Length: 84
Image 1 (cartoon, one colour):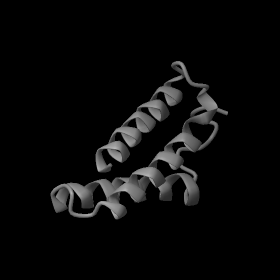
Image 2 (cartoon, one colour):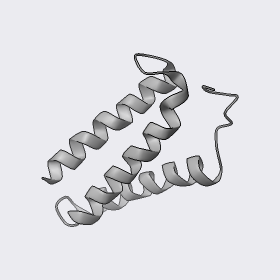
Image 3 (cartoon, helix red, strand yellow):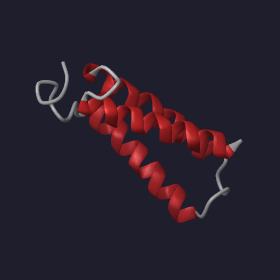
Image 4 (cartoon, helix red, strand yellow):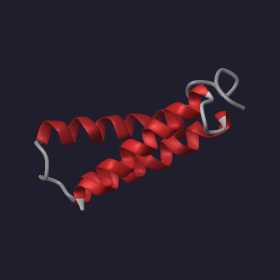
């Protein structure tokens, strides 16, 4: 079950990157996709704490928090820079 969260999160973050670059996914959706899959990833980490080495889980949780802070609070990078 933990692997399902990991695979789903990986696919989601790849989709967000593709959206940022304008490949296959509309370019204006990358922020929403990144936020949704940061939440999915964080939920998987919390639910399955201890499944993977602690450093890996803390690093992944840090990246998820960074995505959420930059997109929901700081609104970085500016909307005019990438996508509309």
